[in-house]
Amino acid sequence: MRVGIGHDTHRLEPDRPLWIGGIEIPADCGAVGHSDADVLLHAVTDALLGAGGLGDIGRWFPDSDPRFAGADSSRFVVTVREELDQRGWKVVNLDVIVFAEAPRLAPFERTIRERLAELLQTEIARINFKAKTGEGVGPIGRGEAISATAAVLIDTDSRVEAP
Ligand code: MG
Image (cartoon, rainbow, N blue to C red; front, side):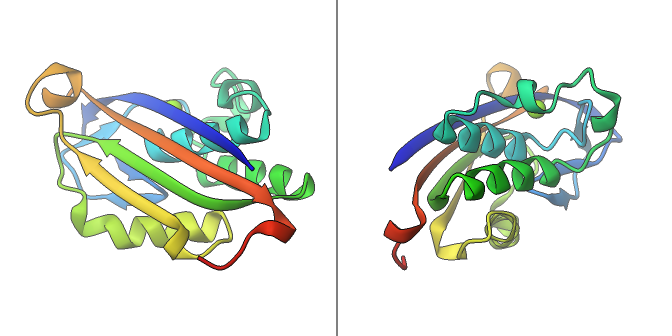
């Protein structure tokens, strides 16, 4: 078994799309980034890379590379999941936290978990989602930024059992 963690932060600006976990969330502000700026998928990508001992997202998908301008971050997760597959690793479970003052993310929990399960080719029962605010303080609390943290456990194919 191996464990990986990932964390990411993006600045928020008005009148931009807000992508979280591969889902476009209706919001007044969206995240700024080279790709689609999906803070959660970036944290998940880094957690997967960490678990596999494969480095970090900046090495695999540099934000200086025009190929990734406006990219759907789902492809980052899928690429890394395929790399792990090839090495015989399968996701046991994924736990994530999104830190955002607004909007309220609880209504999107199920949809985001379904999308993450689809991207990781695993069961939704293996995916846990949590959302927290910044309690009105700091860059999260002031609505200037959005962050996400992810932790993933992987195991060799043969040893993964049903949840
Ligand atoms: Mg990012």
